[in-house]
Every structure is written in C-alpha cells, then in structure tokens.
Image 1 (tube, rainbow over the protein chains, first blue to last red):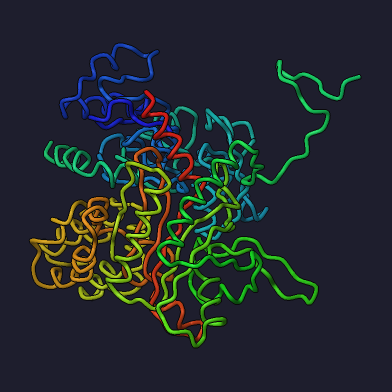
Image 2: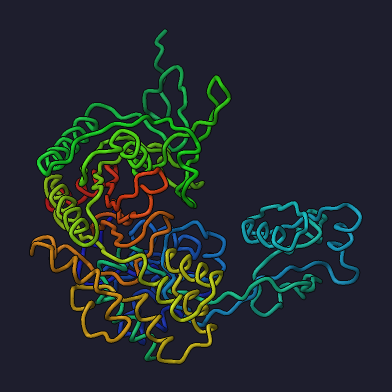
Length: 214
Length: 337
C-alpha cells in the first residue's frame, strides 16, 4: 500500500468532471493552494497541495486502499460502489443531482413492457443502483450496462427506459425523454480512509470543523 | 520444440492451470518471510502461556449457526458422505469456543490458547481479497472484564513488536456503549440496528440523518454525534458527566491496567462498533499507517461460550498475517528512503 511521502498533510482525492470546480473552490476556502491544479489539466499528482485528481468513480478506490486519506465524490458513486470500505464523513451539499428513471415521452413503454412482457429492459451506467431499485420496488428488470450516452438506449430500442443521473434535466428533454420516477438525490460527499480516520484524527477533525465553519 | 514460448517478451508456460480467484500460491521467498514472522509471534504467545491448538478447517454448519455472524459467517458449504452440511471455518474464535466446551469441560479457568491457522471467507467482486487467509491470534477464556482485556492487549502489542511492526496503533472501543446509550434514549430496536449498521460502516452522514429524526433534544443529538466521532488518547475518557461518564467506566479500568508502552499504542475510540455478532464489550482493531485497512481485530465475547454449554467470559484477537506482512514490507521500504 502506498503511503503519503509528506506526512505533514492529508492527501485528498479530487474528482475531475462536474464536481471539479466546486471542490477546488472549497479547498481554496480552506487555505489549500489550488492554483496549479486549476491551470494544469494533464498533471494528476500535486504533492505540495496534497491533491490527487482522478475520475470521480475512482475516488473510492484510492481512498479505500489508503492511497489518499480523504476524497470527494458524488453520493451516486458511493451508492454504486457500496461495497467499498470508506467512511462517509460529510454531505458537502454541492453538485446536487438526481438519480431518475426516464423513458421516451408519451405512453410509457417501460410500464407497457412490465405489464405485457413481465420484465423491463433498463439501460444504465449504474447497474447496482438500478438493480437494487427494481428489486426493492418488486418489479423485474433486465439491466443493460452501457458506458456513455445512456439517452441513446430508449431511442434505438436497446431498452425501454434508463436509470441515470440528471442535474437540470436538459439532456433528457433534448432527447425526448421524461422523468418517470425519482430514485435518489445525490450530492458531493467527503469520504475518508477508515485507518486514516483513526490515525490522523486531529488533522481530519480540524478540517471538518473548518468546512462546517465556511 | 521448447515447451516454453514467449508472450509480450516474457517466457510463457505451455499450459496454465488457474486457481480460484481470491486464492494464491505462496513461493519460497515469501513463505520464508511469513514462516519467520509467524514464528516470532508464536514465541510471544507461548511465552505468555498460550498453548497452540489446531482445529479442523471443516466443521458442521450447526457449530456456526448459534450466532448472528452477518457478513462474517461461513461462505463455503459442502456435504459429507452422510449428507451432513459441512462448512469451512470463517474464523478461529468459534472453533476454539467449541473446543473449550468439549475438551476442557471441567478445566479450571483461565485457559489460554493460541493459533496460526487458515480461515475462509467469501470475497466481494473486483477486490483483491483472499478467500483463504492466515490468522495468528490468541483466545483468553475465563478471565473476565478489564483484567482479561488488558492482558490480551499486552500480548497483542508484544506480538506486533516481535513481528517488527513499528508504527502500529490499537483502536479500543466498547461495543456495548453506543447500543446501550440508544436504548437508554428509548430508540426502538429497528432504528437502533440501522444506526449501529451505519456506524459500523462509517456512514456518518447516515447516522446524522437518523439521529436528527429521533426527536431528541439538541444537546442529546450533539452528544450522540460527537460520541460517534470521538477517538484519541485517554483524555477522551474524562471530562464527561452523568450516564456517559459511568458508561466509560470499563474503558477507564482497562486503561488503568495497561503498561505505559501498551497504553501509548491505544487509541480510545468511543464510536468503534464491530459488525460481528458475538462481541459483547471491549472491541479492538489494529492499524498501521503503512496499510489502508485494519491488520487485525478482536474483542470480548462473554456470551459465546455459553451457547456451547460452558458459560465463561472470553476475549481474543486475530491478526491477518498477509496484511501484517505487507505493512512490514512497506515500513521497511519507507525506512530505506
């Protein structure tokens, strides 16, 4: 397992993508110099600032292994990777999105498939969340995992509906999809490695206090 | 023609027979280090009066059915020639509880046993977890309360010192603390279990939401949330009042009995909850900054032996030898830099 070469500060896993800007703003408010991170989008490890940047879905992986002490990522990522042993310390409030079930506007083909075929095909980047949701609501679903542009699936007949994350609903609307059910609200979360949470307690608690004070 | 071909510039054997995911072969260089490591720890166990035992890797399923083991229950079942269901043991604590009740039914406690043995658990997908893992540990049977716990912590630290691990710490909590507090606040069982599961998983956001919905006074809410996050030196055991002060009596007593060297290793962790069904009081976890997950764990299980017909209080720990070896290697590498 890797260890932080500079033992004086915590190493924080920062997600590139939708949460990137607000995460850096938060870290800047805490007095961390984020200047170099903002201007350099090729570099990944910023030793002086104690920041590593990565895809949001990789944040729990690094934090669980202790390659980063803390991390920031969306609740959607944490729900999808619920088997990860990471501590969820705080709801940071920003990056609010909603996990929804959506299908083509007009008569709901998902509803029709369930009624007439007994099973609905759902395309999603979140197979675990989608599987759990249909299981809990007592309906049979065939989950089709896709890696991107989920909106395409119901338009081409790959699936009758999608489970996806939406912030404003614009992409759904532009593709002629409407929200049928609201599954969960996701915001940015501060997570910690369980061992770091015990061994670096004073530093982590001080950081939490400062975030609460903002 | 040679039987060895080349793949990507590396020699490749003519035939590769796979082994199950989560299992592995151990070759002489590693095995030599692991053997030396377990011998050093074993010498400490023996020195402290813990006699080595071995129990079968296969046991009847019913032996493990007495406790709510949740995720740590047996993962592998098979039938013997009579049709009985056998399992591969998921830990050594329950087999030793069975052994004590069966083979030492009339022996005068306390009884001290140690082991270096493989245990078997299921693995979660996409994780480098072992289905079969080597544990080194001790069980102290019939030594109640703080004195038994303090002795076990002393053996734990001595064995880690002998292993050569330098920066380890031991988190010490009381698994009855949070549940009894919630019960005192009149929280119903379903909610209590939800909160404890979230606490064990480290979901502090979930705990906060649940506690906010309990309808308690603001002071009590703050107290519950603060308690869940309180971890540090012995100072965290002081400065509290009333019911909370009394509830920490057991941990203060353990602290009083520890030698200064052992006490310096301990992190008092008031929010430490283990999700193993049989723990009743003190619980501990071993951490090292060189490894991202706990290296070992243990605690008191005062009710377990009673289910085997020999009611005796007990306490023990198990170290994961593979993780310990990785942590040792990382510490050595860091020291060389």
